[in-house]
Amino acid sequence: MHWLFGDQLGPHFLTPGEGGPGRDTPLLMIEARSVFRRRRFHRAKAHLVLSAMRHRAAELGDRLTYVRADTYAEGLKRAAGGRAVSVHHPTSHAALRLVRSLPQVTVAPARGFLTPMADFTAWADGHGGTSLRQEDFYRRVRRDHDLLMDGDQPVGGRWNLDADNREPPPRKATVLDIGRPYRPRESEIDDEVRHDLDRWEKDGDVSFVGRDGPRLFPATRDEATAALRRFVTHRLTTFGAYEDAMLAADPHMSHSLLSAALNLGLLDPAECVERAEAAWRAGNAPLNSVEGFVRQIAGWREYVWQLYWYFGDDYRHSNVLRHTGALPDWWNDLDADALEARCLRTTLAQVRDTGWTHHIPRLMILGGYALQRGWDPAAVTDWFHRCFVDGYDWVMVPNVVGMSQYADGGRMTTKPYTSGGAYVNRMSDLCGPCAYRPGDRTGEYACPYTAGYWMFIDRHQKRLAGNHRTARAVHQLDRIADLPEALRQERARGDAPP
Ligand code: FAD
Image (cartoon, rainbow, N blue to C red; front, side, top):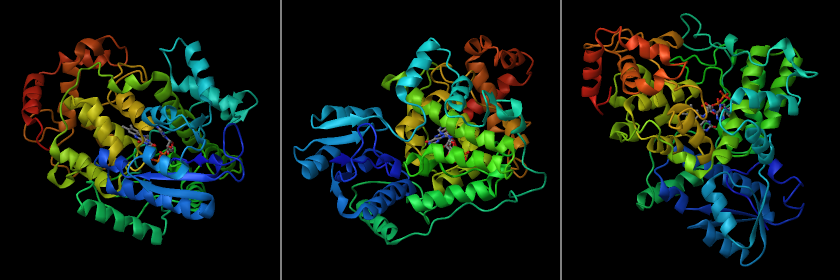
């Protein structure tokens, strides 16, 4: 038998290859209720994962045994007895420990990523294992996979067109003038999932957060390929320029919304980057957009996956800044209506309503707020994992512990990512009607991000002074006359919703 985890749903998990199933190997999927009991997940996420698993089971028909059990071990015993079972390398340390502890299970190499783990390990060890940089790895992936290459040089002469990709939103626009993202149509399977989730909640067995509105993300291979096609044909052109921009009325901007489908294994990253490259070669999308999108998938996604395994399971406990603050209830409950700070209110409402925001609200609005206030990075990671439709252990741990909370002291990024209100003001239309003013550090209208930024710099000035990318901010501390008052005021806010 071959066991498919709920994030191994695409055809590339069934093609012949090392350790994979044969053409007629019976298949097994286990829906383990205990997974939902462990954490208070966003309901739209629970819905999406169950819907995708059940849709796949329906497609595979008699070849697949679908078991509903309390735990994976119990489901396996029921479906396979003592039979030998193969499985592709799962996506979390906990799941890998589990499958390795079961004597009847053999683990085949991971699928759904571009670079084999052994290649990354050799590359990272070759760099001393410490000063690893995404940009170096990305160039290697581009070469290895002949992506946007002209011989051994990058097409257009530059590896990275990021400098062209930091545009604020177009002036006076409230939404980007591009095609709307793909929307799936729900099926009877979605009705059944909703019914089950209602029942589980009513029985007091599980508890969710967030709203389970109409399903927004693909649950089947057909839906996922339609979403990819739609993105590349109608939305990719402006991806680069507005990659970092935010508009209150346009949560999606030019982003692909493909992360959930990729992480469920419905799409293979290779097909995503190849389609984008083909659009550029056909003259249908500019290079800055195509390179930017390719870098997100062949660079960042790949790098995050590899670091998760390379740094090991203890990496999740990193906390060099010794942040121990608890997440307030309004944050845990996604209570956006309790907030006045418009950027955070808008972002938290997006999370509550859809379980998704694009990367800048994740990094600069949500992650930045938590970092400035010194919240426990493990708790912040858990929150992101539970509340985002695309959140899985492998992708959340490096993105939150490393990238967003700088809890690893710079193993993943060269500096902490956090900013004052001026950045949000430059990159969005969120500040205009806000109750706070991005330029104010003190007083009634002091922006919580501006005051919070200086609170963070002040708190960690010793460490930040030693980093050439943050030393300037530390030097500025002495020149801010109202700093003591800004810090006093912001500390007094405590956990109150801003
Ligand atoms: P696009 O902007 O269209 O990018 C294309 C694809 O690139 C994404 O679909 C995704 O697969 C990939 N990608 C880009 N950046 C990353 C990255 N840093 N890590 C992994 N993949 C990346 N992404 C997740 O898939 N799951 C998460 O749980 C997740 N948590 C995040 C938490 C924080 C604090 C931050 C800063 C980023 C996180 N990301 C996560 C990365 C990124 O924000 C999302 O992949 C992206 O916003 C998803 O929307 P999209 O599909 O429209 O992406």
